[in-house]
Length: 257
Image (cartoon, rainbow, N blue to C red):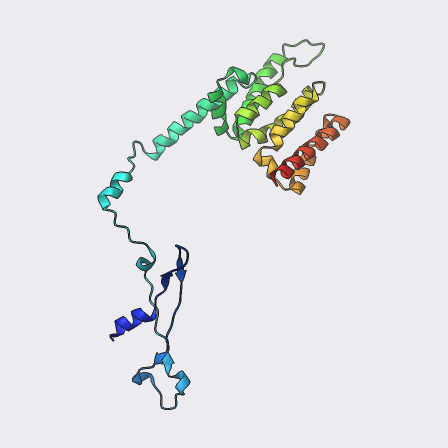
């Protein structure tokens, strides 16, 4: 038997198992060492050497008899219609349009088309903060014209709590949830303390059920609630709001188990 045939019979690294997957089988056979490798005082137990195994990637991959023309027909190469600079410019224009749409409808979001509101999910938290600050500057100019007796701005710089809840339902965005939590939550609660508590429940539920908050560990979530310091709105009201947030968080985790 030739040496190559012998080595092929010695090693059969992959064989069909009971399942369709391949089972790795390492087989070896002890054979007498060649005469040139023998020493005069070599023990009979040491007169055997293991052959060197060889493995090629072609042995592991199944045969694919697919013509090259067929592969090209199914997956034609992509044609670049513009360079990266032009693509970046188009993206910037699109984001700018979305930002302008959100700014224009920020105080009355339901006047915008639902498709436009859903596009707002492309905005980052800094975009929302920029929109909010631009609205504050605009309202500050109106504040100078308010009644000098009150010295207060009668027009809010943010949507009411019902509109925010509607936006949270339509605009599925980590950035918008973070913006509401970090920059609007206290103002919304202070604005709506006298309203029906069901609206607070809806706002808390929409915030907590979003994965950016709901995926936090219990320890991290409690720390995030404490850091928001809801009691600065009102001590009793803020304490109740904290308990409500934690209760919604626990119900969500129990339901997910």
